[in-house]
Image 1 (cartoon, rainbow, N blue to C red):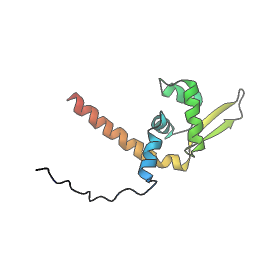
Image 2 (tube, one colour):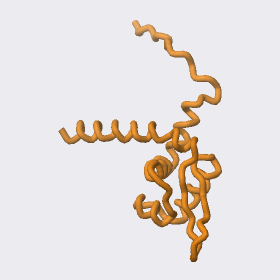
Image 3 (cartoon, helix red, strand yellow):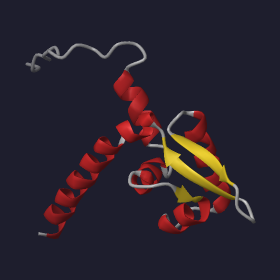
Image 4 (cartoon, rainbow, N blue to C red):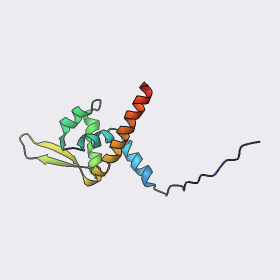
Length: 116
């Protein structure tokens, strides 16, 4: 005799679920890293690129443009010679920092469990 399948007591997520939307956004390549490195201060393109090894400048530039378009960061051209660009988090981007920090903390715990 087959075991009866129980129905979930958790309500189905609404259409266009905000959790799914946020996780789709955060799983984008390099997005959590950018938020992590901008959480304290503005950074120039070259500084961010050196903070995040393994990403090509072309791919990274495209990611930064998308984050700017999505309202997560701002891009400011500085009046220097030669001109430099600084990136910083918007209010919306800063709202993501506690989530990224929590993920990092859980990541540390998971790493300790694997080592031990």
